[in-house]
Length: 262
Image (cartoon, rainbow, N blue to C red; front, side, top):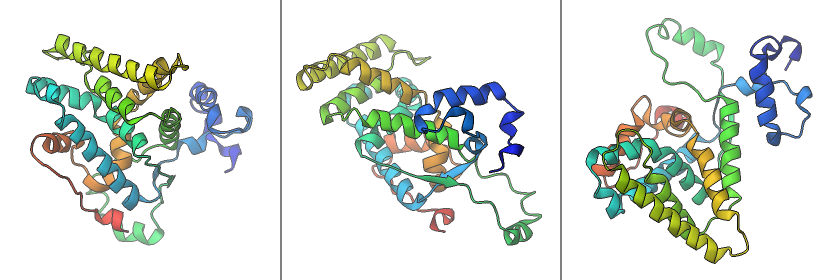
């Protein structure tokens, strides 16, 4: 890339510097030698037919986890929906790590000259399908997942951690927040006890698990939806689909879209 024409030198200098400081662990290159234009590239999955299927399987298991919790079903329906909307992303990401799902991305292919000619006139009448993720956001996601992966949690640690994530009393609008808070404390106490038994010499492990989990909670739902599910569901509302999965559908096997089949 010709850095003489790099827009990073002219636009949003402070953001570029901040990103360089935060992302030094993504590359060993000295910050002053890096051009940040490529961080603004839009990207897509390199193998969507494989990765989207794996992501769909993880999402099904995530919903099954909620289905199998009696304490979740005892909550008012409104509280269930609020918790689902708030926690499905971190629960899904924990599931990706647990199932050891990895993925690679590539720069979004530009339309060929022939495609531009054939689609000229149609594109003006069609709305964009969805927004492609930015490379910088995907790299931050991969960094967060790799950090979580390094914890090497046991199945019991995963189970209790998911409970602590799901029962979040700080979600606005809850009617049974005190009961939900008690469920979260119970899950965290169980997690802490398992950590103490499995790792008696690691006094910081419990706090580290909660700290790294908080980074997963900061991942925007739009990024996860656009990266893993838009190639399958198109413009459909992912939360509405998850609600259907939770209350009505016992299994979900998404059919590959024409775009995935290419």
